Length: 531
Figure 1 (cartoon, helix red, strand yellow):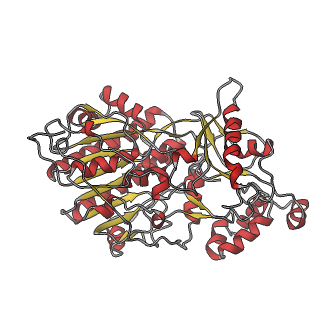
Figure 2 (cartoon, helix red, strand yellow):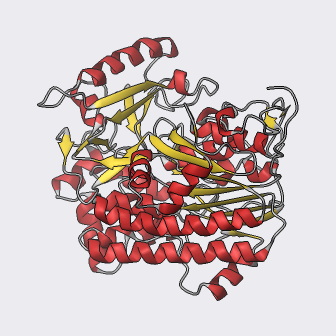
Figure 3 (cartoon, one colour):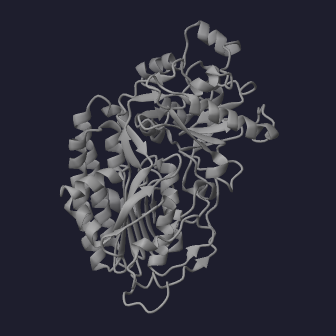
């Protein structure tokens, strides 16, 4: 780590994000010669698996990649933020407490990165990605960039309406290819707009979306061939700009066979209680009125739940939803008797009296209850004797945030956990065919990167520190990630330079975004992210 160096470092970096791409597929298909540009990237740079967050989901992992800190410091634990009154709202860019790379480097170009809506005012340009309600919202910075996108890419879309394709997978395959083409046009547009960037950060979410509904390796390979072609273009572009290139995914992927419902087990064992059908709920239930029947009746006259959400105040909707029987997960829980419940992607919360309005658990009892619940979920096995759940302690994963989830309860490999309250412990996952795994990818290439190097023990929080140090910039003092020195040439400047540190703070206001996210929720439901 000392002495003279002969290889200088780049002064700029390009991050190419590929949502949901697993290392085992890239490793196998590059070894077989099916993905020539990925193979060249492995030969000419450093590569290896990239360990994701727990849970391994998009809204936690991309902010961790972009900031170098775990969720307890960046503040995003899922798609929906849970309140003390048991309601929730969508997380947005304004909830991210740690400055991402594009607030530390500039000028920066940011395209289609999840959790960047609304677009923030930075030194550079932003086109928000996943979680953007529609093109009518503030999805670009500067605002006039939106008009240019619509003019240059008239059929540009934020995302597909996935429920529409549940039983039309051939059409879905075509639609995903089409949206991938539009993303590539957007990337080229941003490339052409400016040449003076210090950071270019662009994400393709198509592989994740495709794999959720189609887990067929022959068809997946065809999608990856398109990504390989994009990679070739980006490699040429970064060569022209003498930039380091980082190709990363937020998590991996694999097939699932069954859904499983942790709230079912909590109810079965007496930790969770549903609202009794008395009063208004009882009257509605006795008349056969449920959420499903109400939705069906409204749809017949052309009124969707999404339309109501967009037109009525959230408090009114919450109060109505609480009275209608159905599998609401949140609204069907009797919190005055419930001691624990699961929300979002396996986030288990103890219903403690300090945190929640109707909490029934004393803070001094939390530790023992967590141990009890961990034993419960770790003891659940299927007919073959295989464990159904894997459990993580929130205090271990998120040590700096007292309001983080108490436990993370996720399904093991072939099981996908969902937070609905159901009568049965397991369910058919259709149309979902596959879901997330912890092992993503990291490949990097540039003037100071060691050809053919293997990255060992890389985690999503290591991307930002490695990138910053590689281009001669200081790493945030509170970063959880480390610089992956395995990536650099022994004689390169980053190898012989001590990691500089600096304090960083966000200048953005932490505030709610009062927008209509009904379309976003619908798309997330179609992918199995929400009930």
